[in-house]
Each structure stands twice: as C-alpha cells, then as structure tokens.
Image (cartoon, rainbow, N blue to C red; front, side, top):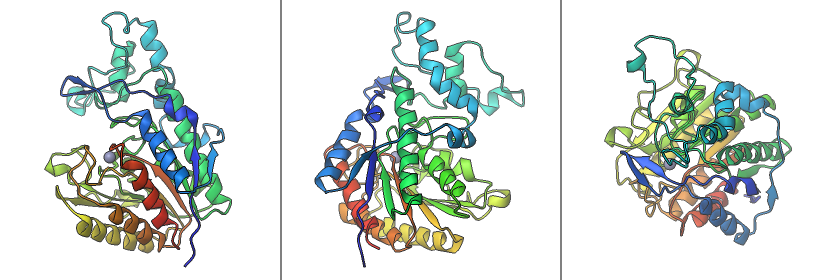
Length: 356
Ligand SMILES: [Zn+2]
C-alpha cells in the first residue's frame, strides 16, 4: 500500500459569497453555508500537511456544456439587475429572493417563458427560497468551477488524488435550475471534464448527507457517467424531498447508471458503510476509469443539517473503501456545516482516499 496525499486546490474568491440569510418556511434565518466553512477546512488541511495550490482560471467551455447557458447568464447578471431595480432600497431586500416559481402544475403545458422582471426571473432559475444571491455570489460560484477544473487538471496530469475546496457547493444544481445552497454543479463539471480528457466512463460517488438531485439529473439519461449516492431518505422528510429514491435508476441510455441508497434517520457507520460498499461494487461494475467524489461531511453525527450519525472513523473508512477502486480521483467539497468538526472530517476522508 502506498499513500499519496491529496493536492488541495483553493481560491480566495470562494469566500466572496455571503448568503446573508436563508428563507425557510417564509422565515429569514441566518443560514449555515458560511465562508468560514472554507477557511476551517483549509486550516485543517494545512495542519495535516497537504500541498495547497491556488486555482487557475479556466474558460466557460465545460461549464456551458453542463449547464443551460441561460442559467449561467442569469447568475452572472442577476445581482446587478436586482440592484438596478432598486430592491435593496425598496422594499429593502439585500439578497435576490424568488417569490414565484413556475412549477409544472402552474404552467400545465404552457411554454416556460423568459420573464422580463428580475423578481420573476429569480424564480425561473432557482427552485427554492434557501439559495439567495448577493454581491459576491457569482464570483464565488465561478471560482469554485475554476477550483474544480484545476483539480481535474492535476489528476489528468498524473496526480492520483486531488481535492477541490469548492465553495459554494454544487450537487443540487440541475442543467437549468439552482437551489439547495448551490449555484453551479462542480461535481458534474468535474465528471464532464474527465470525460473530455479521454476517460470513457466516469463515476460520481456522492457521500453528502443529502441526495445530489442536480448531479443525478445532469446524467440521468447517460450511460457514460454513473451517479451513485448514499443519503438520508427524502421520503422521511428531508431535502431534496422530490428526488433520491431507490427506484430512480436512470432513463433511456442511462438506465442502470444511477444508484440511490437512501438511509433512515439515525443511521450509524455500519449502515452507511454498507451503502458505500454497494456503491463501490457499482462503480467497479460500471467500468469507470476515473472517480469524482462529492465530498459532503454533513452525514457526521455532530452536523446540524442531517440526522445521520456517521463518525470520523466512518468517513476515513469510506475514503479507504473508495480508494481501493484504484481510480484517479477528484474530490470536490459539498456540504458540511458543523464548523468545529468539518475540517477534520474532510482531512480524515482524504487520508482514507489516499491509501491505495
Ligand atoms: Zn448536504
């Protein structure tokens, strides 16, 4: 066995997104996807001795093939449009917050038009009220893409393992809609970039406590990218509520290339790691030659955002089990909200992933 510690990619610009709030059931709450998450993780990884490098700028090429260019343009411009429309002054809303989402039930078959008003556009491209846009949101989300693509470059260049300290996270973003504290889908962009670099088949393993409905949607009808996730059962009342069920197995050419392993509230290491073992088998059967890990650490027992009860040892063991696949691996940060423990959780997971 050899160990080769993950090279860590980061960017100052990932700190520019300050959510300001989350609107949950109509109530303005402080929000948990804070810039300090990234500084805590970086501190822990520097203490653990990782090489840390700054992200390199990349073009929009992969980004625009993964996402609808209209979503990208919306995110790039919506804050300035919001300011121009005067909302921070009257009625005094300092973040972009949707008030109307054009659901399938509302449209009932009508075409989804491009609204002229910015306050309507907010709900055209964002599916919840938890994922607000402020002055630095676009810069941070776009920097997270550069972090991700720089990590991909390292792995394509021969590093066995690279970690992108991407913030904001991304796995809830579909082709044309963002939500769940996410703006651009970093893991999906990593998988597409690895495909473009010549890997015929890629697997995305999502160990965040929540189902990555966005990543699933991006690849649901594709055979070349396997999406496999262990997460708290959405049917037990957890975000994203409408996706992440075990019977979602892919569509058309992608049938069989999607694996969801939902767990009951309170699931401990034993059940979580059994799910990881199922996922490892699926990755091997898929024939992937590269791996993307959506590395959320919010399944940890101390995390306030999920009821799963995974320990530090559980996270390290998950890393080790995934490393046993022997695949070049790009890990990207997803969730994890308990500031006092999330840095060490990422560090032990990367330690496990480095054992090969
Ligand atoms: Zn999560």
